[in-house]
Each structure stands twice: as C-alpha cells, then as structure tokens.
Amino acid sequence: MGINASGDVPGYADVDNGIEHAVLWTQGVIHDLGALPGGQLSWANGMNDRGDIVGSSNSGTNEPHALLWHKHGRVQDLGVLSGGYYSEAWAVNIYGEVVGSSNNGSGATHAFLWTKRTGMQDLGTLPGGGSAGANSINNLGQAAGGSDTWSHGRYYCCRAFLWSKDKKIEDLGTLRGGDWATASAVNNSGEVVGVSNGHAFVWSRAHGMQDLNDLISRNSGWILQWAIAINDRGQITGWGTINRQTHAFLLTRTDQPPWSCK
Image (cartoon, rainbow, N blue to C red; front, side):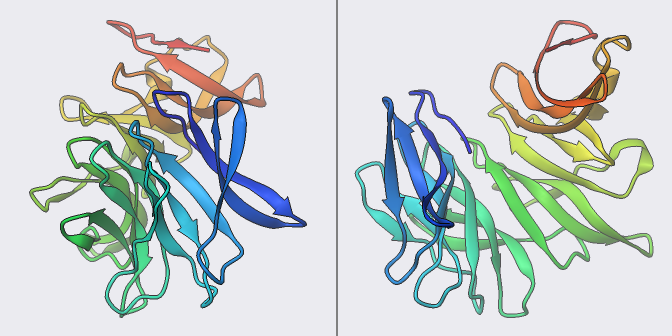
C-alpha cells in the first residue's frame, strides 16, 4: 500500500484462511503487525519516512478504528469522530499527522485530521456535502481527498478537495465540466493527483486541474485513467490502458509537454 524512503513497505496479508493482518515488509522480512485486542482483522495503508504506519483494525465491537503503529512498536487507537463508531486512517506525514475518514453522530462519514496535540479533528465537507474522506497529507499539513457537495441547485456525488491548515477546504473542480472527481495524493509542493470522469488528473495552483492525457504524446497509445501518487519531483504513478490492456504507468515531467509515460 506504500513505500518510504528506506524502502519499507506497509500493507496486509492473509494470515489464516481469509483473516487479514496489517504487515510491514522491511529488509527482506515480513512482520505481522497484529490487530486491536478482541479483533481479528487489520490493514496498513500508509507509512512515513520516520517509520510510523497507519491503517485500521477491528476490535471487540467488530467495527474498525483508525490505528497508528509508532516507529518504536507502540500501537495507538486514534478513536472516532464525536458520536461515531468507525474510522480508517489512510496517510501519515513526517510529523505524525494522520488523515482518513470516520463517521460522526449524524451517521455521515467525514474526513479527519489527527495530531498528537489536538486528537481527531473533523475536516468537514465541501459546501452542502454530506460525506468526505481524506486520502493523503503532505508535510505542510495539506490534506487531499473527495467530498460530495451541493452547487447551483445540483447534487454532485464527489469532488476532489484540498484542505489547508487555515481551515479552508477547496473544491478543485472536475475535468471538462463533469460531476465526479476525487484526489488520491498531494506532494510537498501542493500538487494534487487523482481521477475525474475516468481520466487521471494533476492539479496545481498555477494551472488548475489538467487531464494527464493532454500532457503526453497523442500517439502514445495510453489512456491514463487514475493517478494514485505524486512525489516531490513531480513524477506520477497510477494505472490506465495501453493498446486496450490495463497497465501501471510512471509519468515523468519534462519542461514542456508531451511528458514521458512508460
């Protein structure tokens, strides 16, 4: 589910006839991270360069809670939003700040930010929205994800958002006037990637939302469908089709389009 600068990989694995546990693969060895007391299932979704891992596990209540596995082995239940009963953590930055999603007292699912100082904070939704989830956080504390919203008398099922520490949640729009988008990742320059209306996108403050298919050679054979991650060099990974077959892609930025895709 991820990789850090040391080459450590978090994820999950079958441990006993369909029972899955969070695992860490490091230096050629896979380690079972276990589950919450009373629980059988756990998943590791992200990891930072310090060695902190985030994910979720069920417990005696059988509902998953967001977890933080600290680099020294301590496991911390991050709880839920007020009135909620489940949560899941998706990403953690170098400062140990965690984002994910949790339901609340109204039954809606909202994006959250957890910090050691403040605990779990509700990041809300885009205006008029009922649900949201955060998928990524950078070292500036900016979070990216998806939220439904109500705009101009029309209900949108999902829009990509960027949340910043000034408490501002920003609608990043959609491609070609469509009505669906979600953000997968944000790098430390504030560049966001994700999917909108079946096409992979990159968003920046300077250029807004751009279809990655418009930035590569028209003769490449690729249709880039979902951008999953972006690093601080601007390289983007995801998946799409080439010659009608589904493949993973690595997109490398050049000074001018077309960008290199392989």
